[in-house]
Structures are given as C-alpha cells and as structure tokens.
Length: 238
Ligand code: GLN
Image (cartoon, rainbow, N blue to C red; front, top):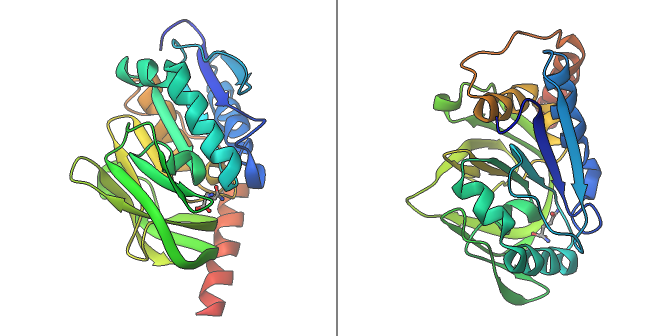
C-alpha cells in the first residue's frame, strides 16, 4: 500500500459506469473497512487528472461513444500507465476491460486502447446478453465466476495474458474464455456488479493491493445466497 490508507480510484464515473459498476468501488471499500483498513475513495471525472499513487484503479462498462472518449482521455492523461507500471491494481469491466487492450471497436471504428493487457477486441455477429459464468483460473483461488454480460465486442487474448475463466454459461471473450489477467491487472465482461456477485474476486484485488497472503474471513452468507440463487436460475434454463 502506498500510504497508511488504501486508496481506490473510480475512473470516469461520467463516462464509464453502466449496470451499477460503481458498486465495485463500494464493495472493495466495504470489505477493506470490515478488516480494519482505512480507505480513501476518489471518483475522478473525465475532465480531471488521474492521481498516479493510488492502490487500486477501477474502470467500468460503457456504451461505444463514452468508451472511445474514455480511452482517448486515459491515453492523453497517462496516469493509468504510470500507476500500472508502479504496481497498482487495475480492474476493468466490459468497456473498461476492452480499453485496457491494444484496440477495440466502437461505432464501427477501430480505436486504440491503452495496451496494458495483451489483447484486442473486435465485433461479434450478435450482442452477448445474459448470464455469464465460468471456472476461474485455479492460480487465483477464486470460486466460479458469476455475472451479467451485455456487449457487442469479442476479445482475443495474446500470449502475455491468461484467461480469467473458462466459460460455462454465456460468451465472455469468445464463448470459450472470459476476461484476462496479468500481474495485478485484471479485466472481465462481468457486471452485476462483478465484485458484489464475486466477493472472492474483490478479496483477490485487496490481497494484490495490500500484499497480504490471506485476509480475515467475512460473513458472506448474503452474497452466498445470491450466488446460489443465480446458479439455480442458470441451471434451470439449461
Ligand atoms: N461498448 C462495448 C461493447 O458493446 C462495451 C459494452 C459494455 O461495457 N457493456 O462491446
């Protein structure tokens, strides 16, 4: 951690904040505070400079126009590149995931991404909309991923990143894999918000940010109920 409190930045709430993705910020702050960690949260609009010394940066989903604008502004700002190079955690969802790669499509045009993750996105034949589930890379020690997806893009991973999960329901990157990670950078197509639906994923980001091997367990009976409900709903449809 850079200071005595955990600093979490929610990037561009004015552009990238679909499907309650801002909930990821609330969940991280809550789960850190429940462990007695002091937390500072900061929402940085697209007309403001990004601080470069935070511990965790969150980028949410967005429609094509705001996604393209967000990527341009992040590129011009340069702060996310500096923070990632210094070892900060970066978590991107959907549009926020695609723009961490080399390129993506928005409104029929190929746009440059930040090139922080070795991947690129093009367009699928149809939108991927609905439940998304998958078995997470065992090295991350996170149980099955659950979420909601709504995207037109398809994402192709290069050799420098690992898939976050193998898809069991839905599409994710391409119907086979979902999301990607390298070092302390991680992206997913999962909304829900992702960290509310997957508290172990929130704890993974907190462990990366703090360097803690383990975190004290929390009472997750409510999120577990929600996860079981979603699993049953998905199973009933298959
Ligand atoms: N605009 C992107 C796409 O449709 C991302 C959508 C989203 O963030 N929900 O693929």
